[in-house]
Length: 327
Ligand SMILES: [Zn+2]
Ligand SMILES: [Zn+2]
Image (cartoon, rainbow, N blue to C red; front, side, top):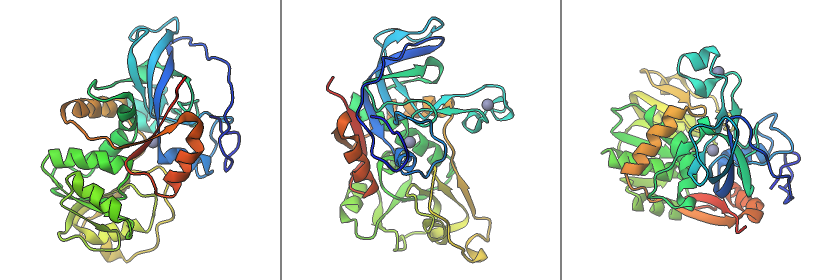
C-alpha cells in the first residue's frame, strides 16, 4: 500500500521485488502494526516523508534473502523491524548513546519504505529478536506501541508509584501491564464518553479509569500522555504531585494551551520522548518475554489499510490495529 501524497488514501499497487544488498535483509512481511505515527504521516502532520512511501514501522517478518554483507541473520528467521531504521553512528548524539536523536537517522515507514507490503527491506543491525510466546499479529504492536511506550514509561522514573496514563490505546494497553507487573498503580484516562475504553483499562489491571476531564482518586507521581492532544499537558500537570513528571510519548500533538506557572511550579517537569534506541528495543523485548502481555489486536487485511487508519483516526480501535497479508 503506497502513499503518493499526504492527505490522500493509500493505493494498492504492485512494486518490483526489492533486492537486498550490504547488510540489508529481504523480509516476507507476516504482520505490520498500524501506529498513530502512520496517521500523522498520511495526514501531512509530519513533514517531508519519502514519497511515494510504503508506511508501516511495526514489521514482523521472516528473512527470505540476505545481502552480501549480512552476518547475523539467516534465511527463515523471524525478526521485528521498528521505527529506527538506520543511524550514522558518528554524530555527537550517536557517540553519547542517544542514537534515537541521531542527526542523520532514517525511519522505517517514513524516510525508508516500511511494512504495509508483502515484502520489505531492513538493515539487519536494526532488526530485533521477538519473544516466541507472541504470534505474528501479537508481536507487531510490541515494535512501536510497546517499546516507545516503554521508553515513555521509563522516563517517569523508578519511584512513580501512582502512574497516570492519558489516552488508552495501543501503547497504553501494553505499558499499563508492565507497570502493574512492576507493582505500580495505574490510573487510566480516556475520552470522557469512552466507557468501553475505561472497562478495557480496568480489565488490564488499572486501579482506576475515568474520563480525562475527571480527577483521579489519588495524586499522580507521574503521567504519561499517549493521546495527541496538547490540552492534556496542563490537565496532567494539575493531577501530578510536586517533583512529578509529565511525559509525552507521541511524535505529534496539537498545540499546548497556555497555563498558569503554578501548575509547573514545585519542580514539576514536562518532557517528550523521541524515537528509540536499539538498547530500548532489546530491553523491552526481554521484558515482553518474561511478562506475558495480553496483546489486544484488531486485525485488518493489508488491502484494508485505509479502513484501519480511518478507525484509528476515529478512536474506534481497541488495543492495536495490525495488518496481515494472505499472500
Ligand atoms: Zn548519529
Ligand atoms: Zn509508531
